[in-house]
Image 1: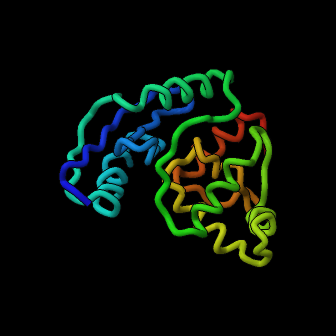
Image 2: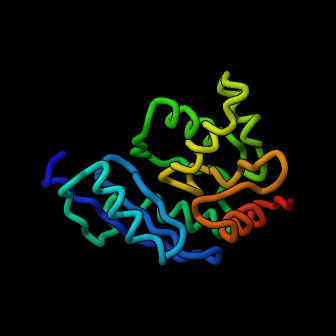
Amino acid sequence: MSSLVTVRTAHVRLSLGEVHLATAGHGLCLSVLGAERARGQLEAWIERHEPGARLVRSSEGLEEASEQLEAYGQGALKHFDLGLDLRGTPFQLRVWQALREIPYGELRTYGQLAASLGRPGASRAVGGANGKNPIPLIVPCHRVVASDGIGGFTGGLAWKERLLAHEGIVL
């Protein structure tokens, strides 16, 4: 990777909380739920995927993501339609694509998601890929729960509960 890469970052304040966004110029590459974790996750993403990249606070390239997040927060958007720059293993990419197919207001279990990928019994692997989703909320990993309860969430359980309640899901 080149030090010529610029990673732009901006944030959106929703009634649900603050969402930090980032792009390396090829679509949305990262969303972080909550200000307290944003810097650390952004630095980790850069070190892993674009070492030496220059970090700039700028909404350039993030306008559409910001607008769609605001519409989601207001209850006016049910499905995100954004260019994404997802970087992961082939299995992770398959899981993240399957997450994008879960409709607003619906839940799946890790086992159901694994079965939909033709990998019944791989619920732990699906959970691991789910936990590495770099674009939570927009790639809706919050819509996946454990068969015996809410399960985990990299954004924290309070965020998961707020997002599910926002979509009308009561556990």
